Amino acid sequence: MKRFALTSLSLALLGTAGAAHAQNSVTLYGVIDAGLIYVHNANGNEKQVGTNSGTLSGDRWGLKGQEDLGGGLKAIFQLENGFDVNTGKLNQGGREFGRQAFVGLTSDKLGTVTLGRQYDPLVDMVQGITGDNYWASIVGTPGDVDNYDNSSRVNNAVKYVSPNYAGLQFEGMYGFSNGAGTTGQGQTWSGAVAYNNGPLGLAAGYYYTSNPSAGRSATSWNSPSSDSIFDSPINSGYASAHSIAIARAAAQYAIGPVTFGGSYSNAKYRPDGFSAFTSTQTYNIGSAFVNYQLTPAFLIGTGYTYEKASGDTGAHYNQVGIGADYTISKRTDFYALGAYQKASGTQAVFTTNAAGQTVRVDQQAQASIGSFGFAGTSTQEMVVVGIRHKF
Image 1: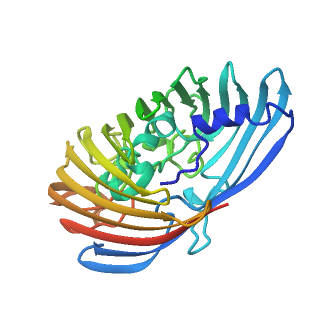
Image 2: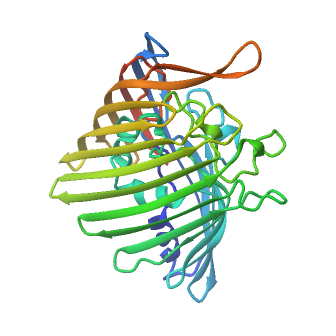
Image 3: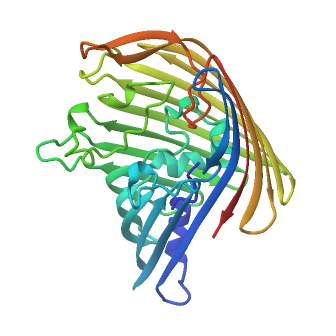
């Protein structure tokens, strides 16, 4: 799920930490999440058994800190590295601080402004009250076509987070292309608003990125503001879309030990003129979850997700997931997860023939649970057990 990110809440906490004793601080932190995974129908009809990294929380280590500038104003920064605990390799395209890298100013009265590589407002404001916040991809969007599982970050971004007004908070972001003469090309902009008061949580937001294939040469790969991650067995080829637009809303409510909620996303991938896609690909996704806190240390839950695709390719996906998490200390927990997905209809796959031409092939829709990225047949099943430690 790649969580433990510096969201609007943690930014606010940074703004108030040390108020009684004006001082500077730097914190080293991290998450190590490793498990065993079984997938039925991975890459065709194969069964796969092995290790998995970052199932509930993306493996990371980071540094964050603040300096009191006086008058209620503080300078803040965060550098966060993502890695695969099973191989030691860097994630996020091999970037040293691929998860987050930003610096800024925060004030209790005026809000927070940060510059650098950051999560977008939908991740900060909406994701925290969805089923993904608890159980990650097993209740997430098939193929993660709407970035439900927080796979993307925004480069060259300026972000503003408002103060908290009795539970109401809003956030806006703009990501520059950083290319000469390319204003408006490769840009990203996003905004979201959230209301959290007691047991009730509400949030909604919008995300847009313009990232044409022409801006993806080796010399300008880092210029487009948004990561090119929206490509999976479900929407193969649409990472080269001319633009991606995502609207999302979510709600959560707690009654005693029971928490339930739901969310809706609409994601549109528009063709770029450089691929074989001829029309806008649209994904409509609805999801719901229910959690039950059996004891203070033991949480169980379940979630259901439905996704409908239309455009060059049309398919339906039904996914159900269950999870259990047992906390044995402040820093360590054990978890067990299971998921099943059924895909129906057809989807388009684009390949290159012997003449170097891009050709379209329609095939049976492939099941692909969450953002795990395993191409299946029309069905896929998965079980993961693991341990997570935070420091």
